[in-house]
Image (cartoon, rainbow, N blue to C red; front, side, top):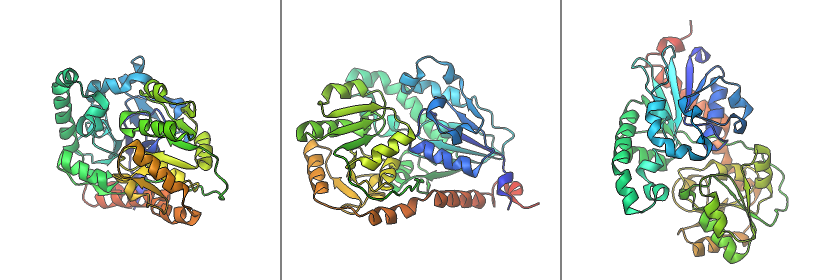
Length: 373
């Protein structure tokens, strides 16, 4: 089977950092080294050399001013920008999406695989967190959101085959789109390091957006007076700084090398939001750093209570502090992390993804391309 003969195009929502979605995209770049990448917009200085080796095509959103700070507010423009891409001449479209990439217009003769990180959170599950609870604002947004939901659902139904990151998102796709998705756990690099004494700080490594609940960690740090480092950027930065005590340090965007050093030395990674899956906790475990996380959602598929971390069951400061105290009373041997991460090896992800494409090739229009000459 001539897998490399496929003319594949990769579609990604936006390229403005190296978070979990971009780690998945890197693995697809390895699988399809000749594939061009199409994306709504991006900041090339913030993505990896592996991704930048591919031809990258941005939509006209890239030309709009202030997109780095305000791109979430351009959401109503995304349906128009994403449909402008032309994928005729390709054998297969692969989108990696939590927003608009899955809604690309693909010719009926070309199959489209979507690796879905989540249905759009702003529309389906986290409206209050993103747009607030103000009645006037909700009334103002009612019809735009209704229209975007309809557009999003119609786009999802044009996808040939859905893949997704966790059982949590499998269920969400079922609820939002009425569709089934195949589970393939996302990859994480396993750069195991010898265990060494941790430094006296806790770490948040996250986009600064509402559903991440970073405010809980800050308030816990204020109350318990433990050092907290926060690496990441986002629209809540100024608001979070206002509530932070002197022991909270905001680091902004950090490089991959800086991120690894922060994870290696942290006493624990704090993960207080309701997560779809969470690549960062796996990256923390790869350097033997335990997790203090909210015990709901996709995090429960990667972290084991008192084995690789500690869960708290309510999104309150009291519950989080109690979990930190439990963590400080327990040990977490490196072997616990090693066994957990075997399920999320990058080579396993690539193997499962390739097998999925080959299975599709038995019944889809690119069957001849996949057959040995």
